[in-house]
Image (cartoon, rainbow, N blue to C red; front, side, top):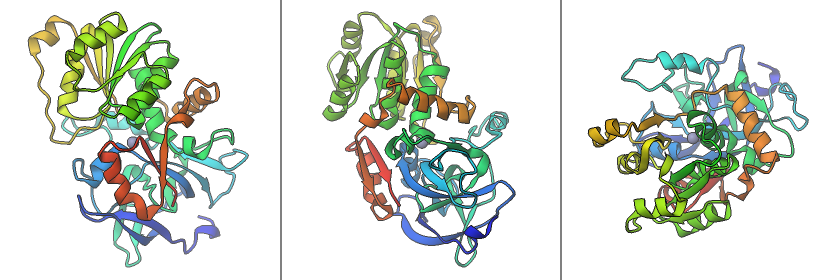
Length: 360
Ligand SMILES: [Zn+2]
């Protein structure tokens, strides 16, 4: 560690108990090693996984600083990552994340136990979600997760690359490998769902979106969707087939509820693929008609962004954005400070907002 972070105080929104408001407090770095970097947070994205954690639908150890996607600037070794502006984004997983694929069968691949990187002034440990903890003015992070980002990618776009954008793009380009001309339905048009829709359009697929929000459906159509429907639309499956002109090759589920996951499987054509991207509650169980699954040779894929080299995934998103094929700057966003996070969590959960960005 260099002198510059000696005595650093990290002002962060801390989740002390599930389903209770986060509290803004001062913390200090802890448990550094030779790879530890200190990054000033310029802007962070609020993702549905953060919302699920805040409300206890997904659980990790508390106290916990949420937030796992951001754009920032390294302060302990300025310019170490090499971009002109010194701005960096953080990759979705730490180095060696593929090792987690050997996690116990009953666990999740993302369960990597690490020492807490933060502590209270009294020295009590505070965890950082995904070893990031972006809802703070600074993060304590493994430097191998930092990727330089050029100045032509604005903060509000860079802030969502680490999770929302790479999750959506990797699901389409790698997990499903959607080909040109494919027919696609996207269930859920929040931040990740909208990126999935953009990425499908970039691949030359015919896409229809489904979401209760009229504003999100309008956005989907303006981004290239053939049409967009309310989930309660009468005879939805027939309407989707008709609108796409063919049965549905791929259904991306980006809501994270058993009901929509089941719907994704049911909507897929024989031989088609349902890609489950939304984060479901940890105790959720889905049922589907076994005979229909087997007899129709349907495929169900889970997607948690584990499969790609994280730095390459970030670079691909930046390249697609620059090429105009992934217009992330058209995703409407609301900016809040650390003190506004609790209200933002509630609004995102209600579906009232597409994307929330936190400027600490
Ligand atoms: Zn996320």
